[in-house]
Amino acid sequence: MQSAGHLDSVIRVNVNSFLLRGWCSDCRPESRLKIEGRNHAEVVFRLNSCHERIARPDVIASLGCEQRLLRCGFLVEINLPKEFTPSLVRLSDHPVPWPVPDESDYALRQSLLSLCQASFWEPQVLGSSSAAIGLEEALVEIVKVRQRESFALAEEMIRCCREHGLNHPLLDDNQAWLAYEACDFGRAEQLWTALSSSAMEGIAEQAQATLHQLFESPSVHVQLSDIARLRARQLPDVLWRQRLLRVWLEAEDVKDQELVSKSLKDIAMDLGLGVADVCDPELMAMTLLASLCEEDLQALGIDQ
Image (cartoon, rainbow, N blue to C red; front, side):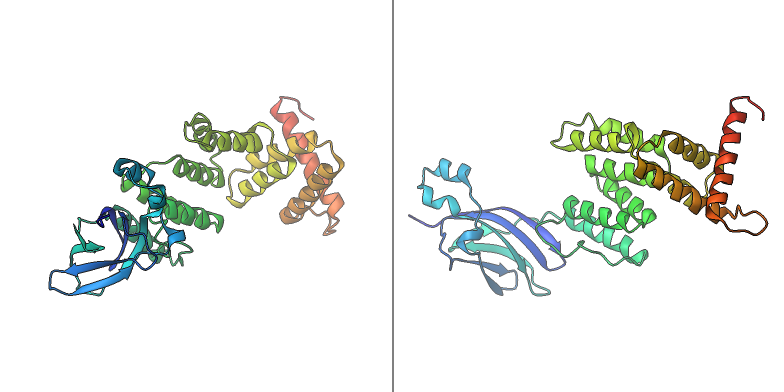
């Protein structure tokens, strides 16, 4: 059978690197593709080994070929020499014009790398992989940035993705986590509630689980973490004080009670609620608890 082939897409990965997806009827492991430049120079690349080939049943079916040719697709990254301008690709001597590369993912990558550089952040995955270029690697990097509590950078990266025309539920999920970390709990709950109706596979279930964990049935550990988050952000004391009293009142399990007791002691020590310069953690915790109860009674209009 006469050799044939075509390119499905050419994607710019880096300045001189491209990701080529296509199909070639020559499925031998030693098969090559030749790229000719405008200055008559040429470079030759090995397509890839058989186990790396991509099945193209749609192409095979349209050609009426044997099933053994199901492995004739290819996905290969090429690194061209500087100043080399491609004009033609030969797949088993079958000439294929070099198309205009898709540079949208490359542009996003460069914008995100610039943000990382400006924030002195060393990218963990961004720019290191060709197969995941685009939104996929951006989302992974955003999560890593957020987990290291570089919240401002994560916010800028999400904004950058949106400015590049990208919209994905996981961008909204990361936006919700940033709102949650900033103690904007109402905004976070609103975003996750919207995601709980997403038609994208797995997104609704993930959002519903997060809502249940953080808002509908939060554990004592989650509630104490929220209190620590409120105090760390130096938000009005009334916000964390009310939560601390509520979690103390609702803690029934012995382990939960121990967690609340430890938190009371730590906060009381931090506030310096000692009496006559005596730093008794138990006494300080009880002093804090008494003040919380008194504030709650006053809020109900009951004076001591």
